[in-house]
Length: 330
Image 1 (cartoon, helix red, strand yellow):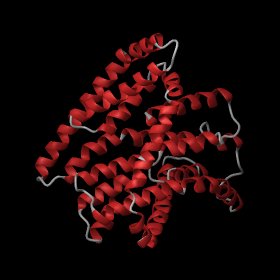
Image 2: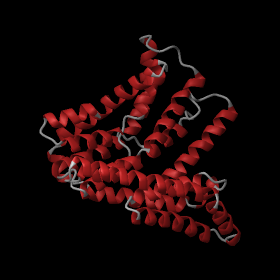
Image 3: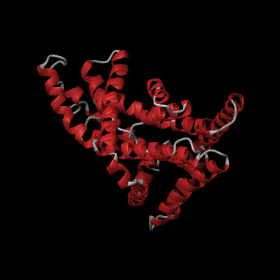
Image 4: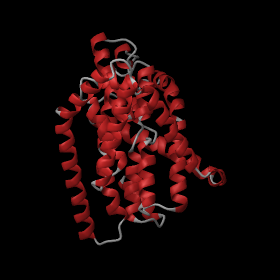
């Protein structure tokens, strides 16, 4: 993030823009990566566990980024900015503490009540789940936080209960509808004419994001003592920009933190990086094979790759992934 800030300053950008773009590019897609890891049975593998842990930490950091955005987009002095950020953080911590208490007391009782009332039909339970998420999002917005943070917190609250899997199964059709609506709204924001006129810059930006994120993540993972293969697999898995970046970018645009060409370029870079994610995952076996031939990696291990392994460990990892996916989609 510091390197990106320095680069934008060198190009004439503001320090606040550099900090935001650095945080913006550091986000990865939980939904997309988790889907491909599940399809390849790699969740129980070592690189899959490291990847999921990193994604969860990134999702949890979204609240901190939302609290930081008003400070970066404000025109007040340093003291006022620090005071505003401190106030936002205190409000965020208090909000999360209240939600934690509710998730252990009222939320399980409410969900069980809805199940008992909807024994004949599932529509009531579906509507109650969506209404609960909307209510938490509305409360978050009224407290000065954001609708997106409230929606994410509502999903996390449901995922901590014993009815997380049941709720995820019930809201599956509605989830697909909201996902389609979200992607359609993002598509309407993209300025196709602008991106076509700057396609060279867009492609170069996407390539830089993929290469630099892969190198940085792989280096960090390697620094924690993991093997070269695991480090590279985690780096390639997290090389895209996540869907939460769209929400952060929209919020930053409303605060006039990023405007004009930078906003459109970041929007197009994020969308194109998500599109290239399936290609990166298809390249992983070839990269691993090349690494083995060049003796960078040891021979393929079925347990590390994730196609074979302990069944209990795989089932446990699958349940964890479903909880993460449910909280993220809610």
